[in-house]
Length: 211
Ligand code: PRT
Ligand code: MG
Image 1 (cartoon, rainbow, N blue to C red):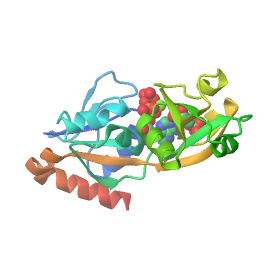
Image 2: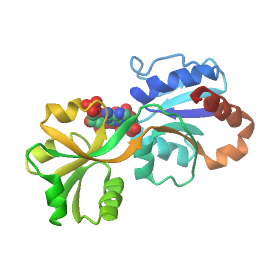
Image 3: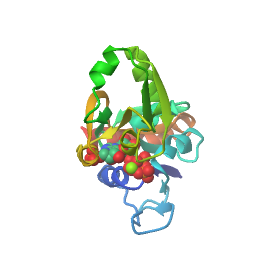
């Protein structure tokens, strides 16, 4: 049995065509089904639906053999026990620093001000500001980061941006790109050895489908 860990939403939606290229079709759609284990047309392949941030954990500890996770999520997880052979080039966005329109980020950085940064991506943010030599106090949030600068919780946020619509709707502007994000195939290192005959063809098909 091969178990594939996916999160519902954009990752599931954008992985479906890749699975299809490998001849794998789920029997149910996670948007309409409450099932967390989805059977497929292949008797020896199943898909489990987990939170996006939990995909690396399931794969690391063998709850799934293979999965799809954003680079943002992988960087926070650290990648222990994971083999990441392939950039699937799906669910693309950018990790950005954003501030209130009326906050002069460049001059705050120039003056060596200590900045309060709210983010879900604490590791990524810590590394970014350390590399820039900017002193920061990191405030860990689990969502709605855009709110933090508006109510004085933080000077800036580190968040993912795709269309920019969410920042704009909240009077924020992106001032710095940290890294371009896309989703990666993650494989359990032990499973790759023990189930190579089943996993390698899947990885090869994904590689060809991505182009
Ligand atoms: O939403 P939930 O809390 O369940 O979990 P999640 O946000 O971790 O999962 P999901 O499915 O939303 O995201 C899964 C992956 O998609 C992320 O790990 C990213 O790698 C990738 N991705 C691509 C994005 C976006 N684009 C994106 N725009 N993830 C989140 N966003 C959010 C962003 O955080 C911000 O709140 O969308 C908002 C900004 O979008 P724009 O279009 O307004 O700029
Ligand atoms: Mg989300």
